[in-house]
Image (tube, rainbow, N blue to C red; front, side, top):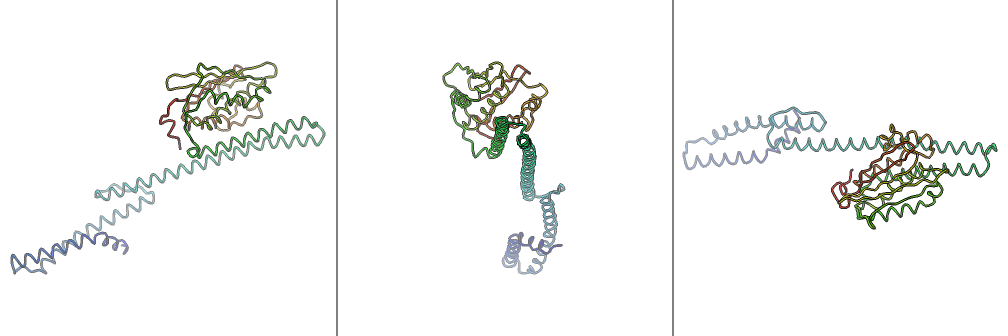
Length: 347
């Protein structure tokens, strides 16, 4: 038996011990003084003492048992169901709750660290591809198999791919601290969309693709974060331009804004190569490129994943549909007023 446990037990029951003996001494003195002089004080006190010892022994057994179970609980060992007092049950319940909460947080941190490690490993692996291509271009150039203009053009393309991947990785890391960088506000979706379209004017011209905006209103206000929403739309529009690239004929990207009560839907529909049905269910997974990724060397498989994560945290619903050689349509559902789904972000 631990001497420390005995000392702790006596300390916890010191107030009870003092009250017990003081009250019984006072009762004995009163009986001896005012009721009968024949009452033996020592006899009464000895009875009180023996009763006290018996009571404290039972009390100590329960105290030691509870102490042992609490220690088992802190070591993540399931405790046995016993008849504890209300106070003891409250303490054990509190410890169990704190322990479970800490275990959940540890699991969440470990899971997030594992996902981040997996993501970074895959990202580094993908970065090797454009670097290998640049190395191959330089080797061919040194062997005079490529002229200056062709070599520079290919290196420029790979450089843009690397920059794109770096920017997407930065967005992903910023998403981990989304609540620090989130500012919900009323945003004019029509003005924001037009601004993004104008910023990509050169891309439209170079890829022989042109935008058409359809909206029955002069102003469409939605509840979102302007910066994050812009990042999401820029990625979706860039994909629409990239996969609509056609040197033979002019193609169009259709933007349609519709509003019903507290809901606004932005549709972005291209006339590009489309997405295979077998790939459509996986386009929001990180690093998934599918068949289109094998035909377009600038596909990273990160863009739509980032868009889906942004949409979740903003409380917007992101949907996608597509047909091969017909085009792809992405729909974003906004709210015109703040609701719990918008203001309460995911971890």
